Length: 64
Image (tube, rainbow, N blue to C red; front, side):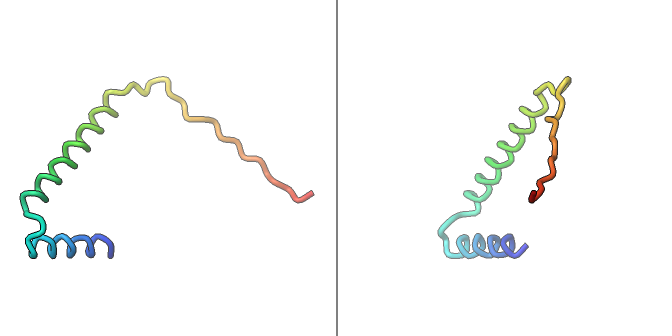
């Protein structure tokens, strides 16, 4: 939570000093949104029928 607040304050400071513009922030947000949408679409296209999770076995370790 602290990192998010610190990141937001950093962005506000950079915009305030004119290092970056609000348009650049909006463009970056659009790229992230488009990337996430693309990944979700690719996952939805995959066929998971017949998929079985790997069998995991646990063995006990002894100090013998």
